Amino acid sequence: MNELADAQVTVVGLGLMGGSLAGALRGQCRAVVGVARRAATVEAALADGLVDWATSDLAEGVREADVVVLATPVRIIIQQLGEIGPLVPQGCLVMDLGSTKARIVAEMARLPEHVQPLGAHPMCGKEISGLEAADPSLYRDRTFILTPLPRTSEAALALGRALAEAVGAHVLLLEPERQDFIVATVSHLPYLLACALVATADATTSADPAAWEVFAGGFRDTSRVAGSDVAMMMDILLTNRDEVLKALGTYQAKLGDLTRLVASGDEEEMRAALSAVRDERMRMFP
Amino acid sequence: MNELADAQVTVVGLGLMGGSLAGALRGQCRAVVGVARRAATVEAALADGLVDWATSDLAEGVREADVVVLATPVRIIIQQLGEIGPLVPQGCLVMDLGSTKARIVAEMARLPEHVQPLGAHPMCGKEISGLEAADPSLYRDRTFILTPLPRTSEAALALGRALAEAVGAHVLLLEPERQDFIVATVSHLPYLLACALVATADATTSADPAAWEVFAGGFRDTSRVAGSDVAMMMDILLTNRDEVLKALGTYQAKLGDLTRLVASGDEEEMRAALSAVRDERMRMFP
Image (cartoon, rainbow over all chains, first blue to last red; front, side):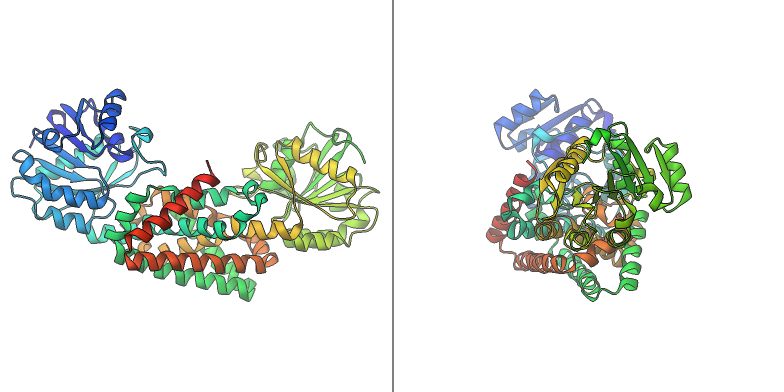
């Protein structure tokens, strides 16, 4: 296993996440190679200086890779994991950046023995997708979850860790199921809440032209992630469905409690409940 | 009715909203006077240069006011409207900054005839409350809703409009009930959703230390307003309860629709629903 500085890193999928990772790694590795389906994306990544070279041909892009990072939507990652084994050299580290890990890691377990698999999920993003939104500082100071498999070697894990740290992130090791449970609540649930909020305004106030002048900062922030890339979010929801549905169930119960409190007008209980929430939010983001 | 430049403006309540308004108005009026319950707040507002002078005595503060702006929580505003009539001079404009308007404007209708009442609700705020968070740029480029009463004179409305524009806001005239309907969805509902999200994490993932390292940007934004001042939000929810409960009902139905879609795994319908939401969010915040 090579050191990161000696490695060719091939990033497959040059959207927001992949393009940002490539740009952040460039100059810290022997070569950063991009693979994108569309020729226009290949050209844009080169023009933007995010990669040393790029191609639309997956086999060509990964042939001499020391590290391959799959930065496509989750179900494309799963499909690519089924194809990539025979294409990569002996000892190649194959990582991904997908938001859900149990299904991906199960697929990684089926990779041929000459491949070193490592699941990964960096906790960053923007509601704008695509290479145009790529930003090499995207990963800085963010948590980069790694979910090694039993078969992942110490050296492969160390190389994955070095990659995460090279882009400015800090590593958190988690079991795949535990990561899926956590992100269902802290990431996938907020997306659905934001979508339901936008749908509510659409069904009620949006008919009033005045409403368009009074969108408050609260609405803007609470609804922000409803602008996320739909293909990416569909794959996430469909590959973490059980955990997302459990989180939705708890959420609906909590919202029901708050609704009953508002309806009751019981000031003492309202104050206690809202104060506890405020204190908890302060602990989360001091 | 005086021009704003000739007016003494007395701001009652020197928290985030009142302190910011005072600071933004200072130098644009004959005098900006602050009224705060606590002596420490009076001193801090003077020390921060937000007011020309300040007092803990409501009667003293408003005695020579051309404009009084009540910047306290909604139910305190309602109480102060019951006291302030005999304390202010002939022709005084009495405004407020409360988030709900129907109840306040009903109370304003009972003010003595020598007073000019004008409901107001500037669409700005922060999740941090108190004078320490005051910022004279808070109102800049924000919508400043005005809800005049049938008895409000043209001159009084013009003075209220001049005040809003002096702090950099743009005015939107609305009937009180229409404003309460709109803000229930675009402002009060997001608060409750954010609270339920924090309560959900508290009940599930917060027990796992790893969860505290992976709060994503989505969670941070979606939960931000859960940190709002509890006393302020209680008064808002209790004085706009019917509209808030209606908005909650629509929201729960929309979230139920999304939950059923996720559970069904029907990709075509999911894609259509999530794409429609994303398009609508883009229209809301281009």
